[in-house]
Image (cartoon, rainbow, N blue to C red):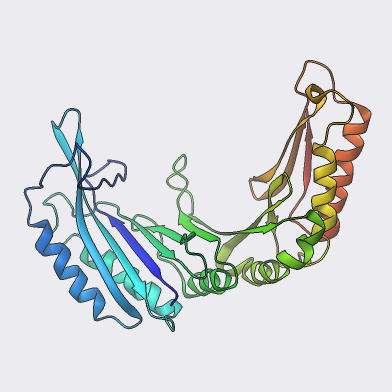
Length: 306
């Protein structure tokens, strides 16, 4: 079964989302009839198509020595094997419409965070989809994109969240998958299905797609676009591994290397660990990595040398 879990936090206005278990020493019983409300949500959600099982419970956190409290609900939803994007959107929309009713007296118009988790083929349940009631609703295309990628790769995360630094800015939908190869030369084979799914999702209703790859001692995240290729990843990872290797005998001369995504671009940052300038060999190897990233078609590869 493909399992999806939905976690909904209902909190006092202007307070960050925090969820605690009953075993936490700061847990105190809320004054509102939260258990009855949670049970009602369970029953109502379990009647929805595509929903197999629901678990809902209240949560509360003491603030400032319990002078104040944060209230919330955690709701886990397991979907049936044939659950669709419409089922996911329907469950989220139901919670968005229902959570203020009968919850904490201050709950009306309070933003709630909604998290879907799918176990897929991964026992650790690393798949997740995060949205918020204070932002836009997930579109059908975005829900399809997440499910398609998550069912291809069980280590997939997606989020539709506003920028906290710029609340008025349009929320960005990001889908990111993680692939792992024992050897970098095997990365093409291991990553091909995931890259194909990410390229299909890229650009859908503003969707940004990222690939995180791990092989040997190499770890990096790159931006994937609609024209990104499924082959060439082994060469790119090998070039990155070569750059990360010590150029001479002293481990202290090994450069600091980070390949990640910033402002939608694939950005390679390389800096020396000492006060000395980067060697010509390190600069050459960094340029080779950028060349390989362009060949494979990552989005806007850029090089920062310090």
